[in-house]
Image (cartoon, rainbow, N blue to C red; front, side, top):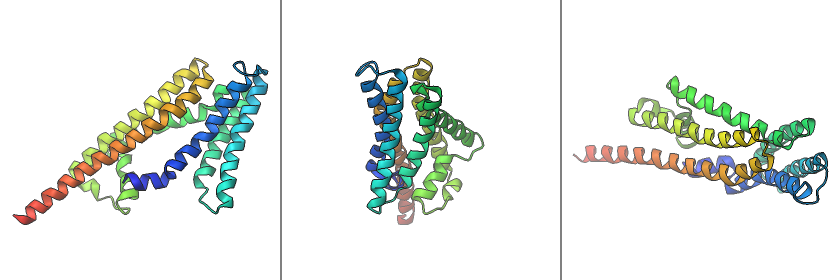
Length: 217
């Protein structure tokens, strides 16, 4: 399951590439701003926006010239473009991160809602990515319960990511948001993926062993 999910996300390379535009924005905003060359706030911001959008475009062009899938690059560029537009219009670097924060909080609401109506989203994701599109887990009480609480685990994981970034946003700590997004968000994401794969494998393996034992008897 973890291998298939990784492939859908573009693997380790996809995770790294999605962080490059954010890293470019943070580094340029810091080096050209008060900490570095002490340029005017808006001047440093505009250069940071250009560096972020430019790096996202460069990744997409590089993949295109090598005839590699650009789905991840296009999705990343779309998100970066919205954040860059908000930062440019308001003249405030923190708004570069606002779309990502709001999107993550929206995902939290959807995940919790799916558990409330007994349609855990993580179960459907597993069915599509790792079970050949079948959703027979819905008639498997043990797997169903597993996907219910795993969906809540994902909601908690995303809420932590968005909550920390949202608190920094309200505190006007723009550069800190970028650092947190790069250094904290992805490890939390990867750990949640690994835990999900382990939990599902644990249940399916136990049930397979029980079925084999029943046949042997």
